[in-house]
Amino acid sequence: MSFFNKVVDDMVNEKVPRKKRKRLIILIALLTLLSMTTSTVAWFRINTFSGVDTLDLHISVSAQLKVSMEDFGTDLEKYGKVITNEMIDGYLTKYDTNLEEIILDPVTTSDGVRFVNQRGSAREPNNRSYLEFDCFFIATEDMWVHLTTESTEAGNDDGTKVWTESTGIQADVVNCTRVGFQSENDTQSAIYEPNRGTPVSGQSTFDLPSGTMVYSNSTRLFHLNAMEPTMVTIRLWIDGEDPQCDDDVQDSHLGVQLSFIGCDDNNVPIS
Image (cartoon, rainbow, N blue to C red; front, top):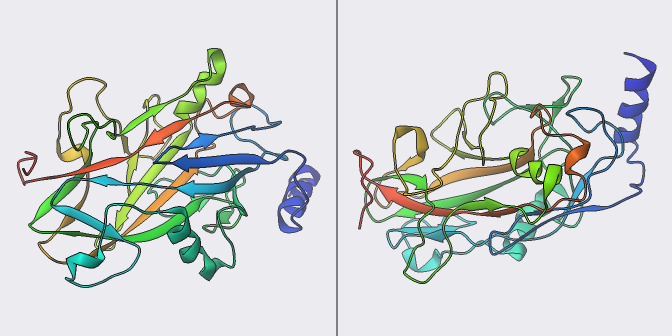
């Protein structure tokens, strides 16, 4: 190991105080990525931690879908359509942390399940690496769950979308974030890459159309059997291998809103 890498590892292990706290905020599924600091081309290497101060993640789901942070069996009344900041904080107590203390370092992955840093060292969830939490989806009939850009009801603006208010080269921030969805029945994660560009080596991702929503096998997240609660692990990370994960996106803002829909085996939405 070089002296430089040893210094970086020592900083991470000893939790050197950050000079500039970054924040990742999701309010009504709004993800705001703030204040990334010094790095080289792709991969932030020193003092470039993104912190999670608050996270209110509202998941809009179609009528046949419900979600919870706990497995309530088939008691549909105990499932809902919202995952709040408090719910996720409750989950994170098992890691002896909370959203305000979560640190997101750039990591990368080929399957959306196992993550490494730039030096190839394995990274663990919710520990200066990437955000991870489990929730339980339940459906009233068999279905494939997809992300959708369509709103759940007329007049609502709750379809999946990714945007930034930053301009110029800062707008590249929309290309650095990934969201993974892994069902307990799957060995790999379905990885949503907003504004998908040049693929990261070994990583299989999908994007959503900018116009009319089209559902296909490639946009499937996971399968649900009727009235069988299924644990789904959601992971959120900044991919250091992305060519645009560099200094250009510092002090930029990213918005992410997630909406889910159920489809049949022919990828037709279930009404």
